[in-house]
Structures are given as structure tokens and as C-alpha cells.
Image 1 (tube, rainbow, N blue to C red):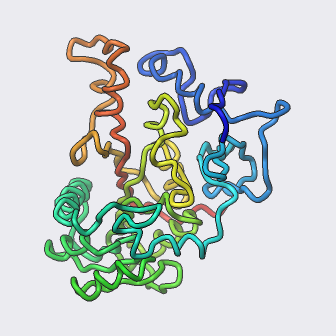
Image 2 (cartoon, helix red, strand yellow):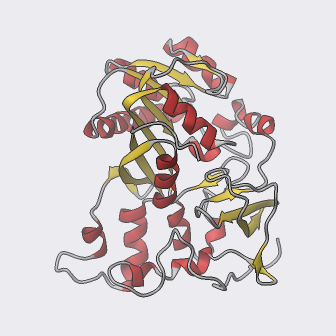
Image 3 (tube, rainbow, N blue to C red):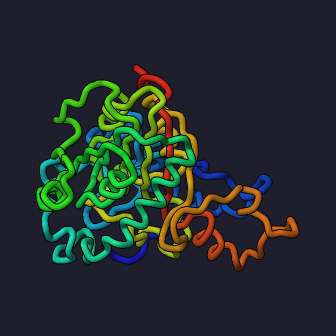
Length: 336
């Protein structure tokens, strides 16, 4: 791309962010909508029939910006940010080969296997969160299970485990080294209705070509009252960057959908889930941390933090770069 493009607020504030003015955090965070306003040409958002929103399925998206020859779009109906048009699905699964996990390719991790101890500790923290929201030992399915480290910890704690993993390289490790049953895809594996007590998606949903279809299938295979736990980058943290388009989680074609707490909640509710909690997670927060809105917005004396400290505070404590979401199956998907 050429020089930086200044994105100006030529339309009302985007629905997922607060408008300027008002009480509480709104006047402090209201400037964020300036950065998220879609690009307009000739007074109208640039639309494409091939860029249907993966959440609400409406064809009412506007071009936001372009990066690495991929169009980032904002849905005008439900506020989801996504890559559109989507890359072909077969080409996406080809990304997750051996190089993806050892830093030899353009995408993925530097050395995933070397981080196995930290990943196992993180798995324990995640299971603690699930227990806190009422999760009890039973059958768990981990989507995008990689080498199976989360499932290995769950198995040691008494869960009956299954995994889904696109990468044949990492799936074979989980099967041969850890004795975990791993399936290549969710949609082509015919699990019975109500099979699982818990389904997990750790840093997985943002990779999906068709997330709505997978969430509907998760609803089907979960028991009534079963839990879904997932983690995903929190797109709100992008707007704390001087150039929000440089946010490291904007990395197509690896990541295809980008969520805020509002859009992930809306997504889950549309397929029959009730969100129990959303907590901060990320590099700036070790493990998971939940803060009340009042504590996040004000200091101990009840006065707002100085504006010069706002960015550091929000990045480190309120946003943390990502979020973990726990939801309960509350019924069947809406048939709109």
C-alpha cells in the first residue's frame, strides 16, 4: 500500500462502539469510533455481493481498509469485522502444516512444542475458569486442539476427551504421543446429538471460514445446559494503536473474523447460547483477569484516571489483547 490513509468519521458512530459524549467510559473511549468508521466513496459504503457477513448473513458490509491485498469489511447490520471475500476454504487448511508450528513459514508460531509447559499451565487456568462457571467433569471436545496439550491436562483431571484438528502433523502427535482421539474436521464428523458436556475453541473461531455453521453444529452436539468456552483476540485493543491497521491480529488469511465483546456475544446468542462471562486475556495480563466496569473506569478514590494513563491502563488491565468467553447452551439456534 502507499502512504497512510486517514480514516475520517463521515458517518454515525459504529454500533459496536460508544459515541462521543455521555457518562462513564463513553467520553473517554468515544474517540475510538473515529478509527473504526468504514471508508466511504461517493457517500456510500463499498459493497460486494461476494462479501456476505459470516455472522448475520446480510450483504450490507462496507470496505474498511485493505491490508496484504485482503479487504477488511464492517457489517452495517451486526457490526462484525471480517475478511471479504473469503479465501477458498481448501487453501486455508493448507496453512496449518508442519512449518506453521515451528516458525519456518510466514504464519503461525515460533516454536509451539517448546512452549508445552506454559501451554499446560494455561490449560489448567482455563479449566479453573470453566469450573468457576459451573463446568463439571464429563465429555469435552476441543476444536483446533493442535498437539493436544489442553486435552492431555483435561484427561489427567478426569475428563473424557476428543479433539478436532486440521493439521495432520499436530493431530498425529496428539494421537500417537498422548493417546487422544482426534478428528480432521467438525463438520464431517457425525457426533451424536447432545454428546458433549463441554466444547472448547482456544484461538480458533477467528480462523474459521464459516463460523456460524460450526457454532450451530456445536449447539447440536452439546447437551442442554452444556458449556462452550472460547478465546479470541479482542478487536477493541487494535484501536489503542497509533496505526490500528498494524494490530498484529489483523493477519489474513490466517485470521478471517475479528470480534469485540459485543459482537461475540451477539454471535453466540444467535445460535442458542447464553453468555455467562467475558474475561480479559492477553500478553499484558498473565492468565485471566476479570475487572468490574467501575473499577476499570475509576481509581480507588472514585475519580477518573488521568488521560495520560488511559492507554496503558486499558491495554494492560481492561482489554489485555484478547478475551475468553464462557457460554451455556440455552436452546436451539434461531431459524430466522
